[in-house]
Length: 362
Image 1: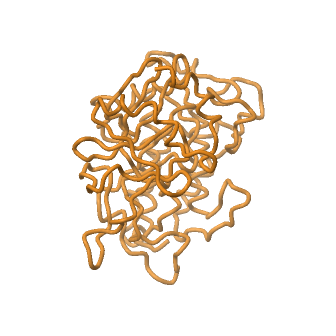
Image 2: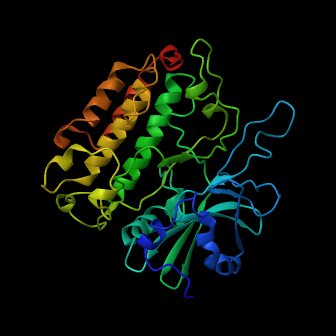
């Protein structure tokens, strides 16, 4: 197929959604995916918006839950849509009406780390291991030099500092899930290196039921949300990860400079302390630092975006949790705990809290 893109750069340098709808870039793939019983979603009326290819409801698959409406079956009857702002991915619908996300993982020699990570973390039985929060791969497809991963269609927003928490227990359970996920990928010798906002998604449909931080009245108790269904976080976007052989010596787990596959002009994430030196560093402790920053922002209402107004701090967070977060964000990686050690410590802190402390409003 001569129309197929030849490189990641060809896709990334495509016109913006305001210039050309990203769905246009996927037209050459339509017949290929149709042959695998996958129908790509269609372009909507707004720049980047995509809508399902038919009006059938999404089949239940465990990857998306909704809030009930007071006068109807669920929120979002007419609200389903996907903002297609990254041309590397496109939503699709299966023959039995499951909604999925197709992601370009590798093209020729590009993206091999990403593919290795998903094969190691997300493919087959390992994808269902308790404590593994890497997004599962439902199917692999290859067209000429391009390898696609078919993933579940999850939430479109990172829920960590989006939906309010009902109490301390709710906050700690979210933090534990995040640490579980990172500790698990580390156990498979994969360092993510991009654990910022947008790379933890969940199995909730973003309907209008839960209270969000932007709409919260702190004088009013937060109604239960995460505790009402099997809330689960998923780590996505392993495209800039570092992978090491499973039987390799941890002393050899070193990289230099930016995360793999990135150049300085394209790196717009917060710079971790190891970037101040040209010396090789352990990328697993970078993940700990990034996750610590996420926890700090969650607890204190801060942001890595200097233009974003800070929120109020959470209340009643145990001092031992704050102390752990401070160690995770130490400038010196030698003073940071491993993800597994931080997870064990956080679980131990939670286990020693009284019921009143766990149920304290935040």
